[in-house]
Length: 146
Image (cartoon, rainbow, N blue to C red; front, side, top):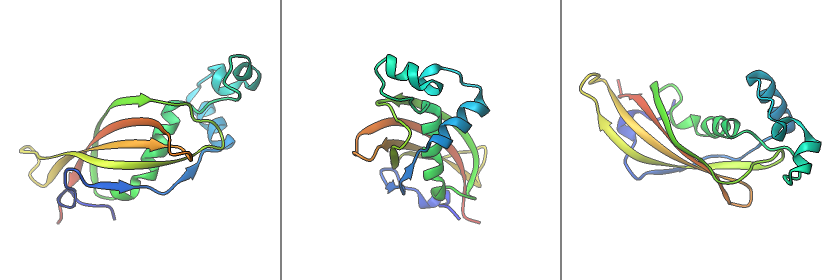
């Protein structure tokens, strides 16, 4: 189980495990979502425009980052309330390995759901060279301890 609302404290930091984003991840994600941008799907085009190789879509990087941090909230999240301030700082390419530093940026009670609380997590996503490739925040409604 993940952490309950009471277990989170503003300013607390967590570090995720690492994960390599593969060619398969890219192909499956673009097929499922229908993304056809040639920077994701056309190796020759990506080279012609100076990228060197195809790049990973930002939303895929975000989804994998969320998965890497899922242990924090697994089974204790009641609802996802939003994602904001997503900034893509550098390209991610097949074969890159990412990890996430998560900080609890806000924690508050909610009067409409006294058995739950709201937290905001700020995720900084890094590659294998420890370069920040993305930053975003997500707000969650968390269960309180039974």
